[in-house]
Length: 466
Image (cartoon, rainbow, N blue to C red; front, side):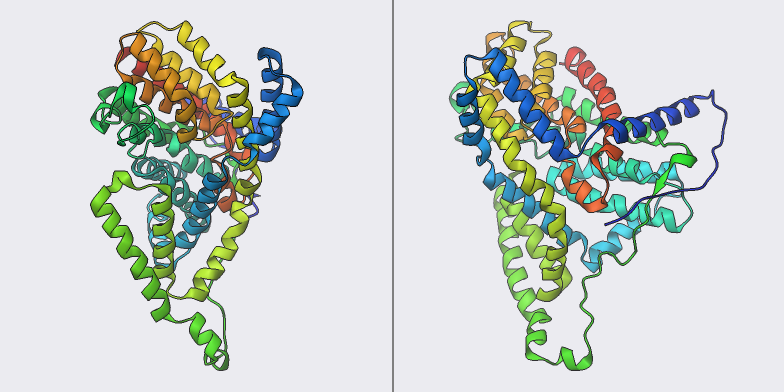
């Protein structure tokens, strides 16, 4: 991984211009994050204790019962955790393939200024996240690193943590995009709310005007805001990693290459046979279900097989995956703690209390906004769109129907809230931190500022365009 270093460029410009104000704001965001935001694991433990205290204070459950509920939930997300580990390591394997590296370097070479570097990274992250949140999460992380490398080698003092924030910030539209967990679920026959709300097609969720306008405004504002937040040159942290970090080709002598074991390891026939067979299944699946039916299992399977094909040998791909394992360590450690928080909130009834309170103060005009805010708060404890919809969906849809509102408002407002506070919740930031080698505090000062701006856009769309 990389070790950031500071540039030695001198500051420029007057201290009273708007750009200087935004630059100082960027400096402040960086200082705040580094000073006050601990590592993601520490935040997970703090959040666990906070939820435990809230459940103890506001529900009838005692400490022993709450500890049992915490442990009962601790292993509830093992399948999902393994899916996330695989999306990181197989994404790493795909992104480190020589042909993918060339594509990422081509995109990284497009910017001609530090502003352009931030804009390109954020736009790419937004577009990829709208198409598929998993692809956006992983590929944009590697793109940020390639942009940082290119900028360093070409004399552009681009702030590396801000580039990581741009890659991550683009994902703020992920749950209002084509792979929105709630929107896809309510469009799936047999979903758990079908008896009350029926099937809701994507034309009534993702492609609602208020959602499309929100997405468009956010895609425009995110790169511009982050570019304006670029810290002053004296505090800019530039990428200091090596260009050959991702090389997985094993250096062998001619004699070693002729050994039967190494001939098997380097065999293209074995590699292509299994990869093409796997990709044949993926293509058939997409033709039958469409891109919108692409779930985590098929995505990971496709990443694995495509990575094998692009690396060209079993040995090279194995080494790439071994190198990726460190990037998945944070997920392995922290997922059980968030599952424990989910168990605490669900078992104690804290979920229902939060959602019911927001419903009780809602009117038909304010329901979408309050539903979004309640989902944003719950997301701190349950940072999974699918998991959150499972527990909050029944409450939100029942309230919408009771107020005479269409069910799609419940779906999209919950998804908007879920994605909003991802910018202040380091759970989904873990893969990017693993790829870039940065700390959460270096990145999240910027994403928290972005969160407040996106909240304004979100609230305006829900209040005036619904």
